[in-house]
Length: 269
Image (cartoon, rainbow, N blue to C red; front, side):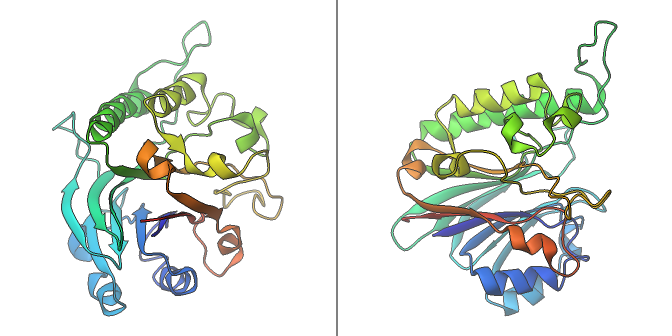
């Protein structure tokens, strides 16, 4: 089972590029982020005509997540538990029925968290957008712990807006006071990993120079000034079945690209 995550930065902007990549890469299931569309505005019929099952959790103009699958989907749920007042569309789950095994897939778009306010001692304050990021990650931690209790194959795939280590940025010094790289953000990410999840890419690839995002500004793509913020976290049962993992870097150089590129895994499922 080939599972991909792809922040498309607007379904309308990627209406031609996304089908092109799907045809070339041929994933079985894809977690999409930043569809930037309400559910009824997503071009469902176009993808269904191409053989995809479509599940969305949309929001007008911002955020929004979706799952496209060539395999059957069951038990689809929307929204991250823990805060009924949260109206931001950032989380979707479904069970993907593979040829050998079922996989519980969580597609997520973790809050960016910027701008960050700092106190008089230079410490980040857990308020505003940064406070929302940290509280959202605490809710994700709780959901991740619950998922592990079932001892299922679990994949949490998406744009985490977290740079895990300095080697995951071409210029880490430029991110020192950014919500994506603050120690508190990375510590929250590690707490999720420490529950028993593995970060798929780092199970197979080591060292610097691997990125999944290049800003549109200041020639970041041409200078390879990137960061790695799109991740797939695997439960122990899923990690045992990992066969391959890749970043489709070349997609960033194609026509009308997103600022993110797809990252995908293959499981024996």
